[in-house]
Image (tube, rainbow, N blue to C red):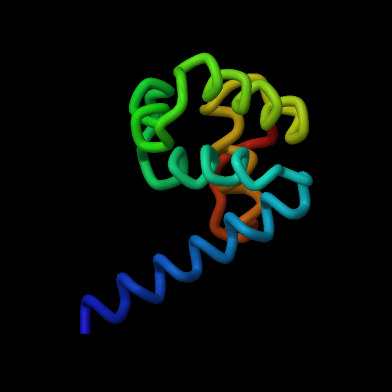
Length: 95
């Protein structure tokens, strides 16, 4: 039963990521980078390894994501996402 709940939560989170990415016109690769961040891989170096690209490429993707979402950091980006995905449950204030 717990496994089914985890799958449901995972699918729900993936759906929120898709909607957020579409709303902010993230490219496919930007969405991959963002999805890894939401999945708790926060270090650009680790994301680069996962995607088999350079750290600079990941940093460039984050700069593009920050510009599109009007955020300045990974923390602000995640706060923006949480407010978007869970507006009624969110305790995060506007960034």
